[in-house]
Length: 271
Image (cartoon, rainbow, N blue to C red; front, side, top):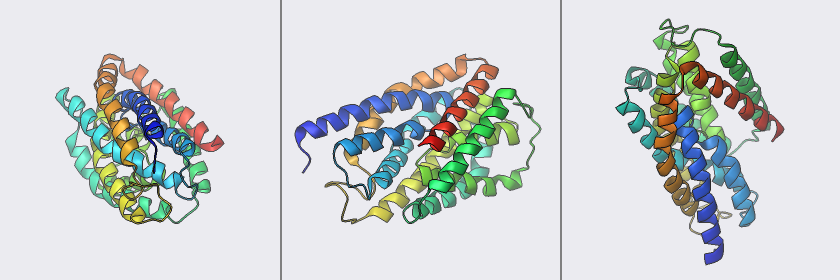
């Protein structure tokens, strides 16, 4: 059983993680998983979670928190007219299927090579955004709406594998390939992330249900205590992140997101 001291530490650390993740989620539409997964890996290691399930528990818990976080972010962006629901509905079918499939895939494969490829892709996209290629907010999509389900599938699979809200892929896709202004790409990505995280978290709960090596009280590959702490933090800070996103110049937001992607890519490669 987990002692009260250990549980208190877990909740406190999760709360701090959530406070940071909430700002990133509101600012960049990324769900916060890029911060949450590494933080949970560190935290679960400190409370002696079995190494066989530690990654799955971190990813599944991250996706579960993103459901709540992104609902908050989406509501705040929607109030400011920054969610293009037409784009959201075009991408959602592929995202739902991809996120569930990614969660099942993650439970049975070694994702090292995939992680390295994803890291390289993030760096490439980040550089393109820093250089201002392909006209942000041009209104002239590079790819048509018929590509939405396929692109959604790709976003969903990667996000399900890594426990992220999909924003590191969907924001560049919406901005670079669908021609949305950065602020609408961020807001729309947040809405897409709600559906993505629901499918992914459900898959991790199902895949981990009854697993012998999970800590007591786990809900499949989801830790209720870590979930509670992180969500309490993100709900406090997502409105701040959204306000920052709407107050920054579009070019600065785009370049900031590009730099963020490069850091994420390097972190994935060096992990």
